[in-house]
Image (spheres, rainbow, N blue to C red):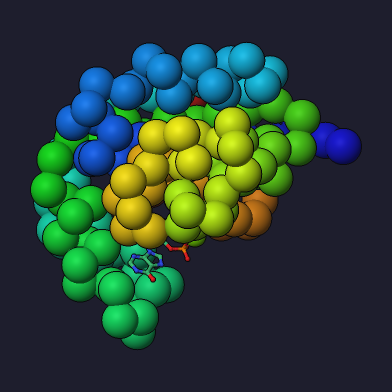
Length: 140
Ligand code: IDP
Ligand code: MG
C-alpha cells in the first residue's frame, strides 16, 4: 500500500470538550503523522461549500449550522493507506454503530456531533486538503 494523505477535521463538539490532544494521540498511535494543522472557525458559507456534496440531504442545513457553530481543527494526516486507515480509526458515522476503541465510539455524541471528519477517497482527500491548506503549510 502506498503512502497517502488525507484530510481530517476535529469537529466543534470535540474542540468544545477539549479533546484535540486526545484525538491527535489516536492518529499518532496508529502510525499516522500530522503534517499540517490549523484551528479555525468556519463561516456558514465555508461549511456549505465544504459539504456541497451533501446539499440534497435532509441533514445538510443542520450539518452546516453545526460545523460553523464553533472552532474546528483541520489537519492533513500522512501515512500508509492513510485514507482508509483514518476511516478505520474514526469508526462508523453513527457513534452508536462504531466499533469499540474508535474515535467516534469513544468521543462522538450523536450521528451529527461525531467528533471527526475524514476524507472518503484519495481523490476527495486532494480536493479537501486544498480547501484548507496551501502547499507551503504542509510539511512532511
Ligand atoms: P462521514 O463523515 O462518515 O463520511 P457522511 O455521510 O459523509 O459521513 O456525512 C457527513 C457528516 O454529516 C457526518 O459525519 C455527520 O456529521 C453528518 N450526518 C451524516 N448522516 C447524518 C444524519 O443522518 N443525520 C444528521 N447528521 C448526519
Ligand atoms: Mg463523508
